[in-house]
Image 1 (tube, rainbow over the protein chains, first blue to last red):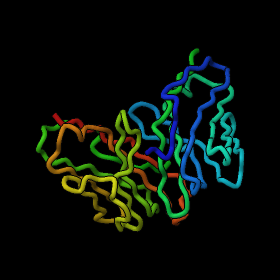
Image 2: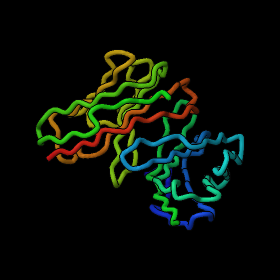
Image 3: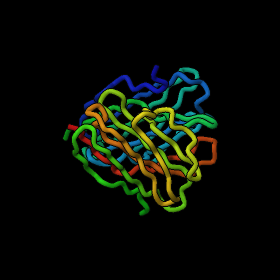
Image 4: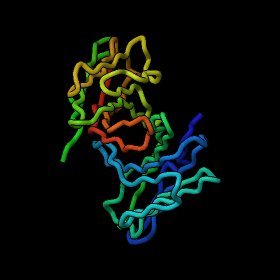
Length: 111
Length: 116
């Protein structure tokens, strides 16, 4: 059973618009969440994180929102740029636990 | 900019052959992870080391896979004998592990393995 789910395998967005990538988790012990971005033929790179004591973390065009009661987090990219086209992985961890990764969402930003 | 280095980047071999993948973690990082990426499963954790000691290899098929850290600058993942179902991209990641699970991992660019 997947503990971290990304139910949209792919997403297409027009350049300049908002991209919203979603992630759901089942383990209530998770208290730290990250988003990674992955380009083809490269390893995932860390993008942004959020601790469970917060409900929002912002870094430039990227904002992560956490809804603990719903066990849901989302990554907002505003405005979206063609260079944002990549696979985005959500990951979660808790005390003494390794990160569990979701299956990824492929974002395509169309010019 | 410090990076995790993985070699080889690509490997094609016939089933039954031994495969060795190598990883040089970022200097100063004390945790090393091996992941496998497949189309169906995303990123699966195979093995995890802290301070060179194996802490978790429950994700690894023990009969054919083995992971070691001969020293702090080298981690290896071996498959013997290899099978076509082992074809995947294998990633190594390193980080600073304090046990509280809140440090991002830094990934290498992976080894793309094809077993014919």
